[in-house]
Image 1: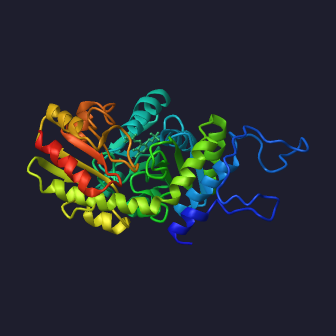
Image 2: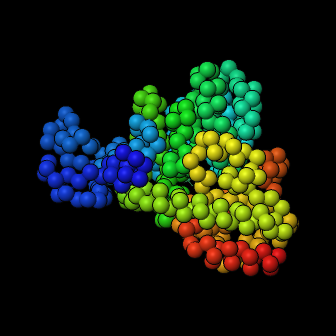
Image 3: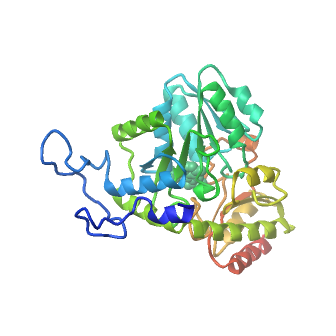
Length: 386
Ligand code: P1T
């Protein structure tokens, strides 16, 4: 099956023969526990909803199919997924390598929880240069963690080349595919061992659910993460599983529209005299446009740009937008805007932000699926007001 077909059918086959009612849409199995005939084993395969639940199963099957993986595991949030991966693959004293541009909350988790409390050593490197990854490998390196494109600067790295280093050195490679979604990028096909998602974003797509996921084809990785998810408990609820399942059905249509609008906005901003620089993988001016074309089948809906302005003027600009909602998060149908230095990346110390290139005048927009003319009009009035 092709992507759009899998997004509608995998995990939600109507059951009309085997005593089922023929629901076309997966029911929301709100039960916390499951009855059994005999004490020895669960009669229908389910015991307790932390361990497994039919609605979550349906979503996990679909996510696995969309990422071309064998297993999907759905979590209570993107960070719950990330934390469970680290708890499952690393031990105290191990080392990991991470892209130096990452969602601020992911970096906070690595540096302020795993490093401080569990002595997990993290080297942040500019993964745009593959040699930087190779140079950072040490004896105890167990994991490479990438976002590509990154949050918020839309930097990219070559997944296939980094996967070959990981393979050679027997290090796990995890790629956070939240920005591109499997519609535009398939990290497992490029050699990654695991894909991680914040389903809060494009996969659900409607700003009404917080969730996360891990997808892998590796039996050993799956078994460990599945065991630890049950042991530690960071599961996605049946209701949220249903929401994400529903969201995936229109993912392909939404991503096409997000991208179309984002490209138009990136080009508009690039030609504006109050804009210093625009970061969008689809622009030919993006220094890594060739990598984007090589490993992605589209460029997504996220655009960042620097204003020729100071922090106060940047603040005035984002507060002056009328249609773009000033809010954290991304990947939903409505357009959002935020100022990374004061919002999503404020937990990163200013000197680290500076090193990575996150300036105070950097604006990040998550381009929604509204009519493009209305979005451009809104940007125009707010830019004029600076
Ligand atoms: O918020 P949560 O579902 O826990 O997902 C965390 C996360 C993981 N990975 C990426 C690439 C992300 O962007 C996020 C969350 N990001 C935001 C809330 C944001 O506004 O950037």
